Image (cartoon, rainbow, N blue to C red; front, side):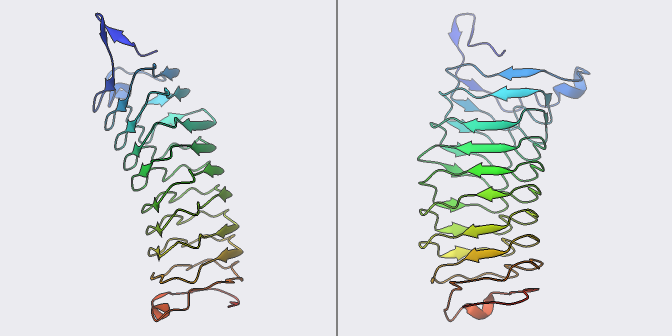
Length: 239
């Protein structure tokens, strides 16, 4: 367990690169379970970079998680619940956490960094907070086992490659307030069979390329920008 205080001083932040490289320099095979104590508000950039652990738990006091904080570790735990006070999750914060199967995000004031959960190969389900406004670039890029994800009504934009290569995603409903979907957002979602897109100004390239199972677009955006949407490999489309 990490200490809550050192020589009588309360620990409130984990520094950048805190244990970055510890796996190699200390010749450690595994760090077991990492418990971050209550009172910690910030986890720095690359703090647990490429560390091999059985699991880690996050305190309710946590407010921010830095860039690449848990980048490409070997984590054997099954699920992560992000505390409700967390307002910032940095770029690639949980990149490559292969064995995580479920993520729950509960903050009402959350900003997600690009590729925050990219490469979580065994991730199956995600719960996004109802107030989320933006899904950033590459958020779930390469989450090959992702089957279900809710897109909150509050979301106005979905970044490029956000769901690229989510091979097991079968259906998704996009909110009425959505105004932008980035390039290749759903590229390679091979099992995607239905998607509902609102009547809004949506501009993207290669949006559904290599989605051979997609056959139903009940609300495809009808705007002057429609020619910018590349609908490749679709057996049939319904408007």
